[in-house]
Structure formats: C-alpha cells, structure tokens
Image (cartoon, rainbow, N blue to C red):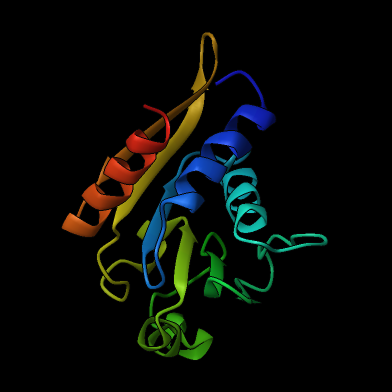
Length: 150
C-alpha cells in the first residue's frame, strides 16, 4: 500500500464483505493507518460526515441505517482492561454491533475473539497491510472479498 487512499480502498472492500456482529482487530504502531482503515470502512457502510477518532473517548458508536450499529474502539489509552465494562462492551457485543478495535491487546481477556486481524505498518515500499482470518466468519469475509475482486 502506498497511500491513505489505498488503505481506505482496502477497508471499503472489507466493509462490503462484512455482516452485522463481526469483529475486526487493528494492530500497528501509531500513524500506521488504523483509524484511516476504520474511517474507510465506516464510509463504505453508509456513514456520511466526519469520522471522529476515539483516541480520547475510547469508543465512538454509530448507528448505520442498513448495516446496524458500528462501534469503533481505540484502546490505546485504556489503563485496565476492566474499563471495557464501563464502556459498555458487553452491550455492543450483545446488540450485534460491528466492532473495529484498535490496540486490542490493551483489552486482552475482556474482548471477544476477532473475526479478522488487520496488521498495518510501514515497509520500505510504503505501507504494509496484512489481513488474517481468525474464525470461520473471518474466512467468510475473506472469501466474499476475493469473489468481489475475481
């Protein structure tokens, strides 16, 4: 990936293959494109207007008319995984919200298993993006993504 536009385009392809309740974990250093990826996915799912990063609020929920609830969590500033309880993580999971979680290691032990893990970083040629299916639902997302680009 060479640019933010490339990251957003890949996120759009991913979003178009998602179903309600699916969970995406985003890993990578600060500035790698985690929020850019989430912003691209959220816009692809029908969100209009600005997309705020939850760096300080930790959680930004959005209700999408066709795709249900979308919840973007940035756990970088989480000091204890138990704080997820106060953010309402159980309610989001129970409601079937799509979860995009940055810095998921900060919530270890309190978060559900992801369907996909997206690792973003820098490489000699620009940005690097690696996507891994963790569950059968994640495999389904990858299959739908591949069929759209076949």
